[in-house]
Length: 216
Image 1 (cartoon, rainbow, N blue to C red):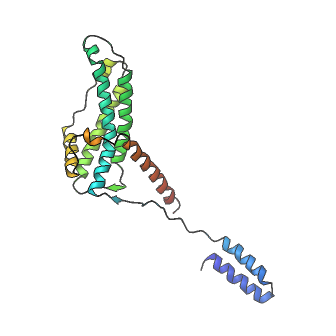
Image 2 (tube, one colour):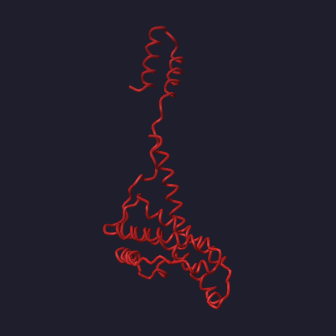
């Protein structure tokens, strides 16, 4: 029996024994009822895990990788803009290259976090390939960081590039299994800001669900 119910029964018994007014009994019962604990609210977000269909997985994969792909291409273009000058003995300004690399590094970190997100389960046969692409992103992070912090264009230009044929192969295998175009440029049209959106959504969801877990 709940505390509120016990309180109500006690007050009723007291009224019978002492002849107190019914108004007093109602007031007291209301006070006792107000002290009863409220039931815990139910989260409005599915606590997961959430299984992705092939179509949903394809959309999510492009959302995870495309924004960083675009930023990497802009970094490459920044290198190209100063390459002729550098190869002819000049000292190009490294500012554009460094800024582009810092943006790639920022998005690369978000990409890794989204691959690590256990809230979603992917279609069968993809886990190992997703892990390869994720690990490739992690290995490339040191290169992006070195370029972003290079003192000169020459220092940035001569950074060793991590070569990962296994990660590249897995990327195409994922696209094949999810029925996505193998063209990593054309297929990314419309996904220019999706990595940031997915990451913000993940952070908000995790914070929301954690607040319910702490109340249990």
